[in-house]
Length: 113
Length: 113
Image (cartoon, rainbow over all chains, first blue to last red; front, side, top):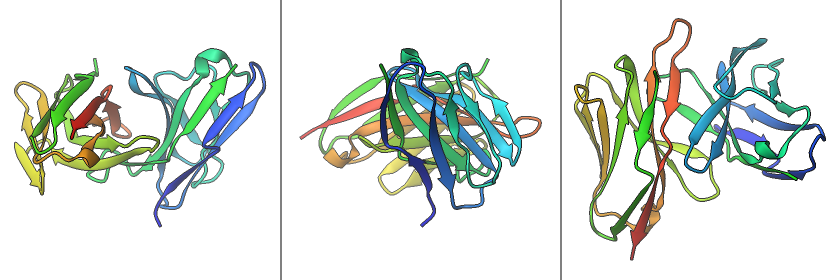
């Protein structure tokens, strides 16, 4: 089944403790992206990647890191999480802005206390 | 600038038609999308319309595009309780190296039995 898999689904952590949210896709998509979803703000792009070893900042990259060492994986790293990073995070993959749109993962709900 | 706007809430009675509206600012959009997000899930592509089309119908869904006014709408006929979800409007904007997709804040549709 074609899908984007994120882990974990839920995560509660403390301020300053490094964490990684994993994202993997099995559709051989070149494009992958991370978004955060906050009430009333819609989806805001954090980072995106157009291919292996090619990443770029989205609209809200501060406090986040990503890497793209393999085509299928695009982990999101929070080196020193803060409470304002409490949010719902989505990974997405696709072939760009075409009629297929993006395929989204199920989301990771992160709480930083 | 790039911006997509939607009203945040819509409530309809079961069996009525729902109309969700969206406005966007970038006239160079190529594709426009409607995504559906059910509770606890990621976004799923519901339908799309290419920018040179005025209307697209897909079973109970009708998408209308007014390019002059930069207005997109999604009509759901015979709305059912299973249609309760958040609906995101999105536009694909052609760039020099990839097409960026901008999402609206989402409209939460509540269907009253």
